[in-house]
Length: 405
Image (tube, rainbow, N blue to C red; front, side):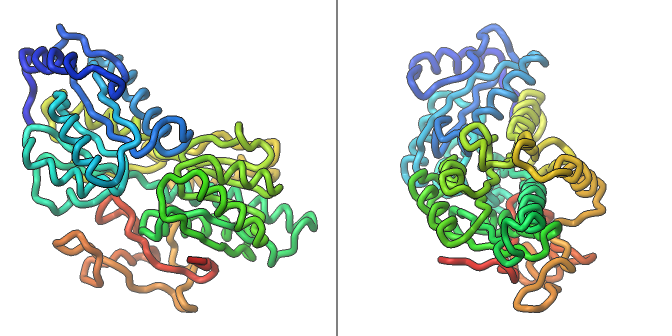
């Protein structure tokens, strides 16, 4: 990575003015400040989803303020509604030609298109969020970033499980009616890891819970997400959760009189009678660290991953009006146990696969794939998620969770 000179910054600022338009947002760079950096942020959606992309925009703005307090100015070039297709290639080229020194791609499906561009711009740092190719691609200017979101999902599951157990104890439902419906985007490791950790959290406080998962085959399709949540509720699910980008599963749950936990944003405002809590990645933590490293002439980590203990995974405020009694205290207890390592989310004594305890899983090979190898993800009584790379790699279908498609 190269430090950028005052002259280069001025040239880039002048160049950016020629490209000014609807795609650029954020804090304007000060032309006289050598601690100014121009950063591209390419988004699969826009802030109107109030979910995934909105969470990235929050991270962008948070990092901007943190860096500004340290004398570092960020000029953002934010491009919205980029497809996981050739439009992503074009967006990366446009951001590069507009003078961005760092370009952040925010969706899993962006990485192949980003990689088509990176070799043509070796002095630009390219970041792919929620991906994994930079671990093994041999390039100095590509980087991956993710967070241990499974920790937050486990806690959201605990909140859901406590509500289900309350309903059982009060006679609202029977133990076998404690069924969670989960709206998943794709049957990718990231989604499987998330709903499995969520389920294990729920079952830790409600032993009879089961889960039905349906995939909508899109990261962001508000209508499909709503339809999936409605169908799950109609099948008898009394709790809905999601790994999808929009708030429609929350509003669908409320319309059916069932409960909900969310992702990426506090959804209690739009579904106050249904949504209990959400979890999200605080991307501001990573953006701050990566941009500051660049400005200081330091290397951006090749593969970055942090968790709740570092503030990279957070819970939204608990909806105390509908949460089970004692939930806030339980959240604090579980957060502490995760932080000090006394609780392993994927403790292999807490689940089975086809009736058997999981003893062997995956290891990372030289191609970035996980295979049975000497570097084994299962050891010391747990599956160690995101240890070998930042992106999740738990793909096991455990007992108690049924995939509907």
